[in-house]
Image (tube, rainbow, N blue to C red; front, side):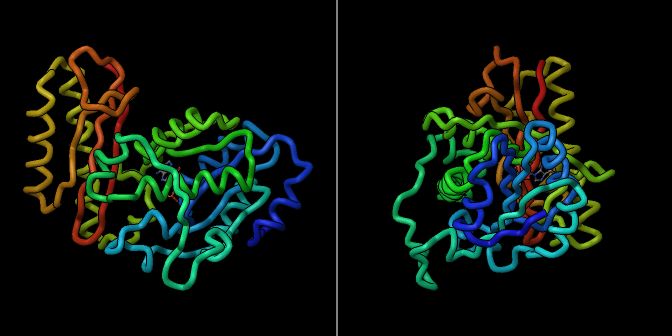
Length: 282
Ligand code: AMP
């Protein structure tokens, strides 16, 4: 496995490579990421994983500074999982006009209005940052396949739209959410949780599962279901950003005749913001 830090070197290595699967990550890797590597391996003989904590997608008061950076341990896991190339650029490599204070990325990808809902409502500019860095990484790696987790359902949705609407010749593949035995979706941010918070954290998925169960039993009062879940989480000490039932096809609020649905939530335990979702059909 090669570990590469510059765009020039990566381009040189990938020049004559046909069949590339790519997984963009921010590192601090866990079994959820490694599952994406496994999926990537099934599609192409060359698997490239990027590790880059992208400043453009973090808000001013978010955890860019404290986000866990564990390159050495990540590389060991990626090597064992059969990755061919790790691309771990510095901020100055990805943002050539970075002056120590401002990234000066004056061209950005504007995502569709859906990016201002759900997570985008409390993280303004987040999906512009995500779409822009993924566009840059796609242009650098030029993969045939790119694998993303359903854990970040809205992100996956927006990346699919970007590829479609910019006519990019990349097939986007989705990986299921990998969970702890408690049901808690694996996340690099779970490391911020205390032991007690980690136990409470499992309630997020339980609330979503209850909603799925109720809808599958025929309950169509989506507003009441999400309000009740929100109340229960708040009663257990969460600060809820949103609980929403949406069409899995459009991410718009679910309509009564939608069959493919997704229930999504974001909520904070202490200072840690967690997200989760379950896609299901009626
Ligand atoms: P991140 O490093 O958090 O930016 O995530 C990199 C990729 O891994 C994204 O496509 C995520 O959706 C995916 N991912 C993160 N957590 C999980 C998980 N628990 N299960 C499956 N995929 C995940």
